[in-house]
Amino acid sequence: KNKKISSKEMVDFYLGRIKKYDNVINSFITLNPEAQKEAEAYDSGAYSDKPFAGIPIAVKDNMVTKGLLTTCGSNILNNFIPPYDATVIKELKDAGFIILGKLNMDEFAMGSSCETSFYKKTVNPYDINRVPGGSSGGSAASVAARLVPASLGSDTGGSIRQPAALCNIVGFKPTYGRVSRFGLVAFASSLDQIGPMTKTVEDAALLLEVIGKYDKRDSTSFNTDSFKYTDPYRDSIKGVKIGLPKEYFGEGLSPEVAKATEDAIEFFKRNGAEIIDISMPHTDYAVSVYYILATAEASSNLARFDGVKYGFRERCEDLNDMYTLTRSRGFGTEVKRRIMLGTYVLSSGYYDAYYLKAQKVRTLIKKDFIEAFNKVDFILTPTSPTTAFRLGEKASNPLEMYLSDIYTISLNLFGGCGLSIPGGFDANGLPIGVQLLGNYFDEDRLLSLASFFE
Ligand code: GLN
Image (tube, rainbow, N blue to C red):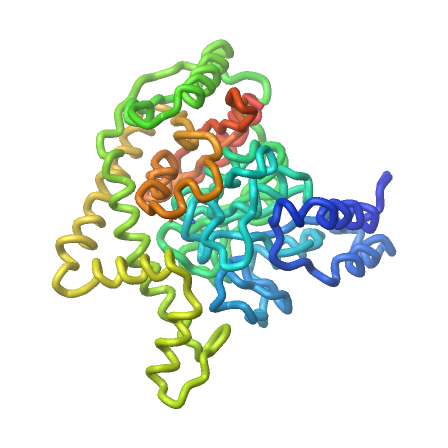
């Protein structure tokens, strides 16, 4: 009612910043050409009853947007204009948000640096010679550089939390089943989850209220009450039990990240939380299990990109040549590597040795979490073992790249909620993230604890 700034002014402000800075940051793949017109409609009072009337937001380019190019960072979708909106997009629009554009990402969300995108390399606003993290690198860099007030990312093995950590923002992965995946282009369906990437915890909570709803069009959407933020730890965190799993503080953790994590632990202790040492003994297997299950699911999901139904097609006389050439030219190296790995672990001769075994170990990793949450309310760890690395530094070493997600991947295998919050800077001024993990559907308490820290 007391609106001091119009929607048009806001949209123009952010478009102005995008024009000025995004030729360096490279976070947007597509801008919504209707954004200004939509803002004018809000200002004319047409939809002023909506709670977020006329506020700009941007989304990772793997959420389908009606009439607006959706590429997934891949050449194979270089001309894909979806005929419908993903549920999260519909929820954003219903709440009054204006979709400013679509954000860069690793191709099909496979990567930890944004470098596997076919279109551009997003850079870290804190040091433009470094990566923003990934795969939601565009979502993180755009918010960090204030090119948009908030964004949505997706997290299969850390793709919201790791780039949030590297870009000094809040990145929240909801419980599997909290947010609808209808219209999210599938990478690994048993792990994928959409979540907010914002400057503050409160913004993340507000956005989760908008997108955290049951959706009958996603068979894995959990039929529970819509998310409502009540901030239970507003005044005190006395007696809250926070577990520190020893497996997350070993080899490979940079001393500066370890120090920032220590500082966060001290903060919680000083404010009355109980800090408890715990062990999650199967943590060591998480990366291996993830890269078997995620590639298996990806190889199946990506079979739909055959040049017939979506995206671009290499025209040939022969149908088999058409499939082969379309996929050879449409997919990049990392995507091909994963399709081959996934096909291999699912092949009849190796299914038992790899896929089935990995499913069993996934259950053990889940048990680690279930047992931990019998003892503690939350788990605290670093988000990423290091701060942002240099562009190109890990691009030619996939194993090294896979290890960037060593602290984030287990949560997806378990399915609980988790977030990364800013936790300081290293000596070069690069951001460090602190990760807090919570039990299934414990978002309200988790966000409240994080906001107490903030
Ligand atoms: N970096 C991990 C991978 O490459 C996780 C990606 C994600 O969460 N989408 O698969």
